[in-house]
Length: 336
Image (cartoon, rainbow, N blue to C red; front, side, top):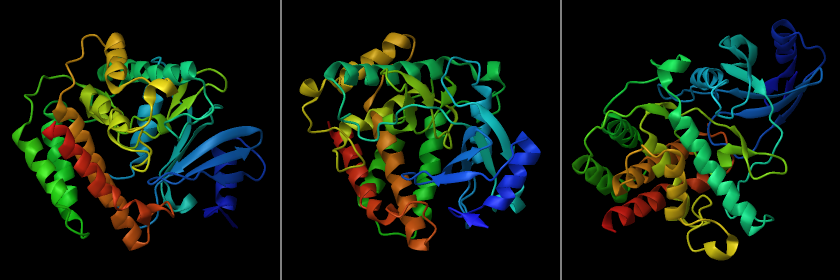
């Protein structure tokens, strides 16, 4: 018996054997994600979230739910707000692909970065809590939580530009000269490695955070698929894309009246991050341009999966033009 694309009988047996839960699980697929299919699961009074790999042939290292589970488990007692993990299953005979379960956090997820329905003071507090939470993550020493081997330390940006460049050239989609230009600039303007290593989330943005049901405070950081050992400014530069892109470009805030809304400027947001991470190196145009390059290539991958018919979201094909849009925003950063 299948529900929401999952074999509910197999899941019921797994939940009983692994977590001691009885009864048929109720499933609800969570819309909006472009990568790992995600479901709310309720069974035997337990409220959980299930994340699994998508079906089909996957690029090496992509959709790494095992890494998500590992980093969430490692961060449990660090002060970084993350869901409590429950179980990881690599047996494909259960649900077709590896998956993991975590406790469901009650709260609010703001997919609209203009934060409609909040007061100006609440909007500022939401963005400041995001900055503080990111700084808190970067303060965690990987070796202290068993993540010393979670990635290769050193030369992070050099390796990342090479990695995303390879992924871009592996695409069979249309040419996008703006991505080529941006990649060339990054290769020529690579900052020297400063030796800093932190746990980098890889997709740190408002829509991947859960906020308290009534307070403008982060209570959960989600979607750790791209996390690794990296440089803290990779996350900060990525987070700044919200100010660089328009509402039509994956929900940015460029062009909005930020002062009237109470949303801090990009500069003020960055200042708030440094207030909680005073020893972090300065944010450079390179870091923001890299984030935009990387996001552009991510959208290339989404478009590729849409053409292959294996995209997680039904809206994936419509997002294809964003690859060029974000590459252009990256060129704006480097051109001042």
